[in-house]
Length: 100
Image (cartoon, rainbow, N blue to C red; front, side, top):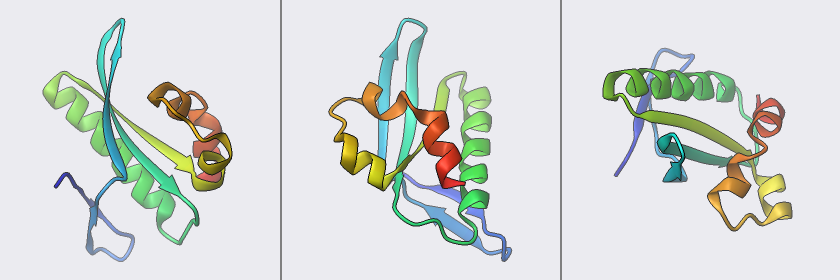
């Protein structure tokens, strides 16, 4: 099972299991996506998301591949009912701003 270990604000190790991991073919090569739908934002959510984004940057540099994090608001996901990866990832900055 895929997971990303991260440091919680309490100092404890957290084990993050994303909702989805997907690979997107683009003109510039493959993009690996970690996708998380989120209904509620709890204390520590922004720290967790920051850790996941940092992990994506580090693993991208280390493996010379592209990893990105896509936090998606559950209400938006339910309303839009996306059927493709592009429909999920296209409004990323809007969704990210709503969650953090």
